[in-house]
Length: 535
View 1 (cartoon, helix red, strand yellow):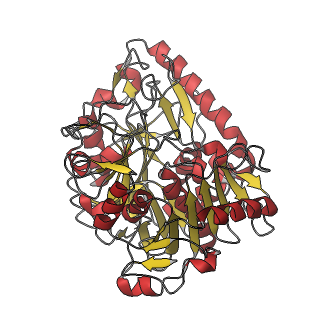
View 2 (tube, helix red, strand yellow):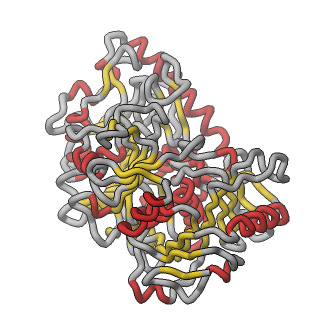
View 3 (cartoon, one colour):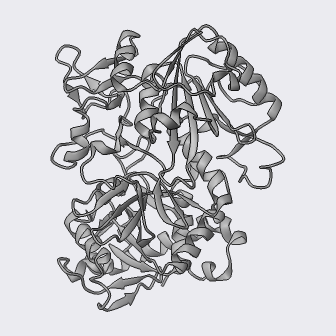
């Protein structure tokens, strides 16, 4: 075994049971990792300098292959079910031994990183991989310790990835050869049988989502930006709602685009980088993210490239629609370098309502905020995801990130409600979807109107305007807003057939009510009272 690198921790791989690797490459920087990834035929170099990688069969998360080790300590704290599936400790141990045996005689890459910009709550994470490009991904995505910190780096959680190792068919506890196993007692995550790098990122997020509530910190799947006056805003939203686009405001600094904590001191980013979806990305619509795809240090997953010219084609989804770019946060201009902010003044919950029912902007009470946070509503339409037909499909994902929440959603919902109330935060529901009719009949909310509404809310321009109460959802809707036609603020008035709007609104209310039924036993009467009721 040979240890290579300028920043090698005195807490070596032997503490994890890894003893017979060929070479250990410690905390290498991007140029060295590029060289090794190219020499190992792991990746190709694109015009502009980005590293292009393929992930094989798995081009997205393997949700059905994710398990949590069932232990006495976590038995009562995990929301066991289809998302958080259990595996027994002895089954985990068997896979761990196979994992360690697989590492023998192989070159391994080690990256020690911080997860969390708040030093009081950050987690020391070690990522052990078989491929240089996965190590570069981890380096891009998380926060780099100093040389002094690396010398004494003692991991609090270790991720061991072995993409070439598949569990034998019929391995007890598993459904396939692919596995993502989290052991909270032993503080280990095992990833095998998949090269999709997002599993590394989401494993860290899931770990923090379990640990931080016990430290009175709310973990959130959201973006955060901050204004020149220090006023921070949280943006929740599922795919297709405009979370990334709308939070990247040239007039505000970006704290982070995906995962944050809300503690006693305020907000903090979990990450040091971005993992952006780049299918159909254009320089005109998102110039800042587009520029990263032409830059040395960026890792591109499953992006199509001309083999001769090395020119990228971001519009080609032949490998997957889930093409991704991983890059350090400082590749984006106008960022909050600390990765932190004070407590938010505003919370924005984004939804793309394809049924054309919800107003473009509504103000929420703390109880309504908890209701809509637990609901996590948006709607899918044809062209946004495989398998979606011509009619919109309502989608509910608790806390706007259900696949990564080990605890019951009500834990996170109660924490959000309490913080909104404690800090006097204004909370808004923003519909970036359709108006004037259902998808296929109406039209997408003009982005300039959405931006004007957001700006007015964030800058306090709606304090003195009149609000009306929506008859179906009980939401407070502004009757006027600078730069926005007043008629668009009332979705019913944008429909040519008012009766058709009423019928569609009734149907959407019923979908909300049916989805929320599973939370009735976990919320108090004030939250139940915040539920929509058809007019």
